[in-house]
Amino acid sequence: MTVRELIALLEKEDPERIVIMAKDPEGNGYSPLYGMWSGAYLAETTWSGQAGMEELTTEDIADGCTTEDIVDGVPAIVLVSVN
Image (cartoon, rainbow, N blue to C red; front, side, top):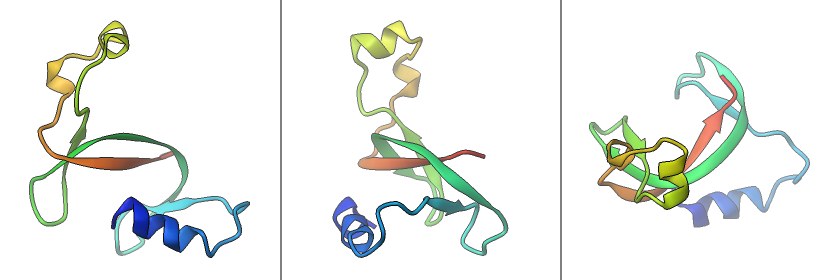
């Protein structure tokens, strides 16, 4: 799903609703959305992969990030659950 597709779906909903994320497609667990960040995604299989930074800024380096945090993947928005 792209950001455009997600926005189109969300525009139809009540903006005051809480966002809950499923642990997996089968619904074996759920958690509220904590936040999001933009970075890169590298698929390892058709159902999972790695997410990381696209590049490092001086602020990232000051926060302790290194080149090991960079992922050579496609630009992505990462949704982060509470649990």
